[in-house]
Amino acid sequence: MADETNNGAVQEQGPNLSVQKIYLKDLSFEAPSTPQIFSEQTQPRIDMNLTQRVANVGENLFEVVLAITVTCKAGEKTAYLCEVQQAGVFGCVGFDPQQLDSVLGTYCPHVLFPYARQVISDVIQNGGFPPLFLQPINFEQVYADAVRRRQEQQPASAVLN
Image (cartoon, rainbow, N blue to C red; front, side):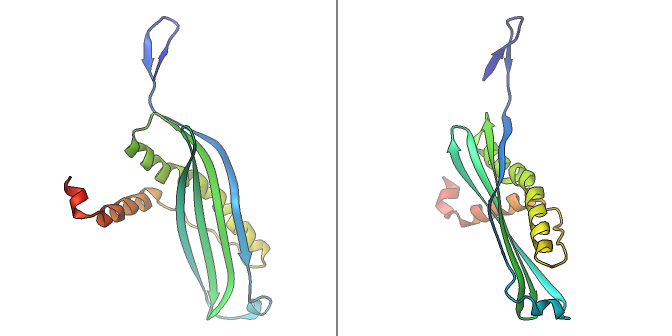
């Protein structure tokens, strides 16, 4: 894509990424063992599961959904289960397919994560539990691992061609 400047010279524009909208797509909180769980003296165990998905929602527009599930168990009892789907619509223009895949898999979830982290902390605290502060996530590493897994799953003939 090229733009003309005031003096008539043509100036090339590089790839452009814009955040169109950030929103909470889904939220679920369950505390099935309350109120008895509040008197438990066992050390809680917290597990977190993270997934993301991307959908093309228009010309150069992509919805990225970062889904985080946090489960807290005290012994065999589930203290709480919190599921958040934080989403955003991103405008992406001028990226080649590999760059686009990388941007959607790293930059976009990086933008969404602080929103999801805040929702999770607030909801858990509103459920009567101490707030949970999720540590930052290296989405570049998550993306690299996903790319490696995709390559391992490709048939050998697809790699050779």
